[in-house]
Length: 270
Ligand code: LMR
Image (tube, rainbow, N blue to C red; front, side):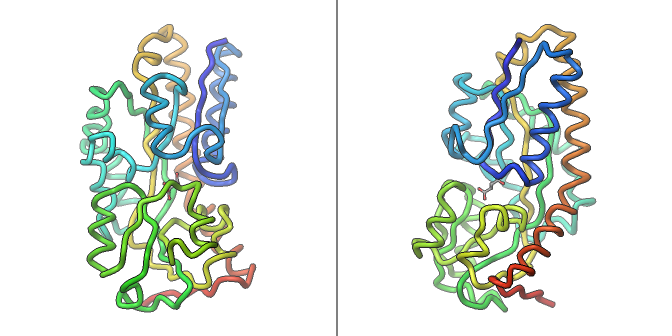
């Protein structure tokens, strides 16, 4: 069979993890076993920066990095998604990802040897820390882990906090040991990485979007037999519908789980 290695950095039980497994199932079914998809979750194979390099050299064929991680590749336009409060919700966001801007951004990956196939949702980020976060001033002077985006960096500096770029796989440990004071993530990532065990406060700020572009190595994709490529496109279309219909529910469910754990105090700003 044709093997697609699909590497990602989050837990299996997240919007991205579940959608990757769904894609595996549908791709294998629709191609009648001619394609085998191997999903490697939890940074098992590569961390954030390494996974994009691995895709470019063909060590893996498929990834779904967060849109905040395309800057180091030289396509900083993706950082528009990191602007605070730019989307009022999923609906407004989908107008962009499913529209002209979304398509134009994916096209910008091609000179890098990458084809962008789809956008998958996660959700809106909230701030966490070990001191209460009731107002922007509460973040002043705090060391906050961010993804590798200049827009996020500027945003944290505007709060007079100290941004620290770090791979996702290192965040739990950095929070546990106090290397950073807090972070921002959708609740599905917060909960499945057990950040609630090492963060006392969570403010439901929903201040920025975190979602993904599903990408493939261009040479690999262009080299596929046309019938297989078209079956994989169908599998991807179905997986995108699956991912985007499940993302909100998953984040809501995980917020409930954080609440039930009793370990993190949840604050809902007005
Ligand atoms: C992060 O690094 O916080 C996220 O991009 C992880 C992910 O893939 O959801």
